[in-house]
Image (tube, rainbow, N blue to C red; front, side, top):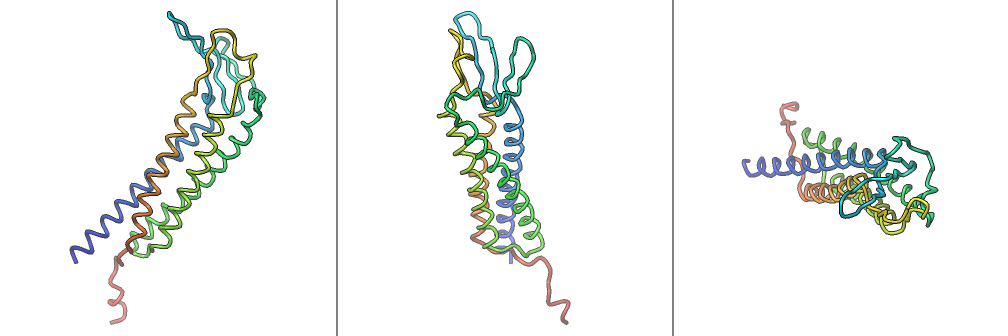
Length: 199
């Protein structure tokens, strides 16, 4: 009996870690998609480092005048930013669905009704969300190039914290998927003695 309880406790801890990873990932993705720090243009030299402009998925913000322009994705010279944005938003939607399913599975585990198939499906949905995010991040990081009118002499292009947050979210999703996949190796134990009702 103690061995079964220990196994159920390990399963619950794995589910809980997976849910926490999924929800932290969702927060990071939402912040990453909504902020304007995907790309930063900096003027760097030996004596100072100054941020000239920072780019969101749809906006360009200028540091010297505190104004942002809704340029859409026109700042991208290669015109691949819309594909990256679509993949990132799709990954965000799949992630929200995965978060709801993971929380529901944890609830079912507490009732003793969670099963291995549901855990495997949720792990697969978490992996799918991370694939969408990773592909969007890779396309954005490799293919997107800022138009030359934004790059004066001495200006350098860097990836901003929005890019980093979304990358962190994709990595956390894989960790959460791994923990959820572990729970598919064991069955939740019934919490209530159902035989009492039939005596």
